[in-house]
Length: 103
Image (cartoon, rainbow, N blue to C red; front, side, top):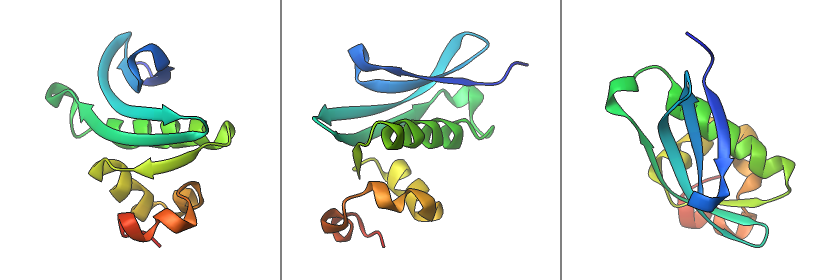
């Protein structure tokens, strides 16, 4: 089995994760200037339990960091991922962290 591939699909407002060329999950976002508000994450149940959601969110947050974007984790999965991986906490503006129960 090939490694999963994560790609931004801005025309659909989401990052997608594909396995062997098939999109099996996504994390949806709303973009405003240099801010990404993540609102929903979904992985095909047939592919659950393989760490794909973690790989997807990690790659999406890495992409946000590389473009200098701030992150608002409205999606509970993204919020929980950031809470568990403090190296991404700096992406959430300090003034917004209490709103998301972070930091």
